[in-house]
Length: 254
View (cartoon, one colour):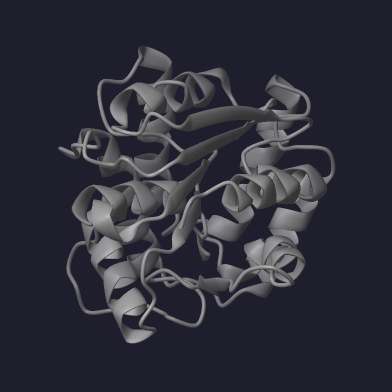
């Protein structure tokens, strides 16, 4: 199982899952380009396709064949892009609190415009402080949207990870926002899929998550709401999330 983290996080956001599941499966979590100990690069622009190519290079280096990919938010976008490019090398997909490319509602467009604004604001107020402010505002507008107590855990993870330089953060944020307009054909992805989303995730993201099954070629797609979960449902309700993933992977015919 290979775990792909969300934007501005690092591999440690999966510690609860990699530790719990390692008694039964081989688990790998890594830092996406621009994040954590992987760090940045000289590439002028980033894209989800580039991140997916990095994942392919990692799997080849580790000689891992047909893993189950587990991705959250940006990580889910990367998992989708990888599966679309290499459907034969994916045994299963777990897509959590993420979104597919395609037409966006007005509310969803506002969410993605926010990412581009963050990329600009980060030059003045760094993303770690902006994240705390966003969580505070989000909780005032929609109480519980950050998950029960998980917002602080996510903030601590973010603050304890290596700081992403502004230029890198801007490239990452723009790549994430641009994924919604990326041409991506998921009809060839026939591996079983599990879609998880927190019950307190903003409505536009829930709506987008529910469109994923129709885009996949797989006939084995399960959609599950994570109780008390926000946008990082694996951190918000780790016990529930982990057991859903465990049962899903157990059921995959390898």
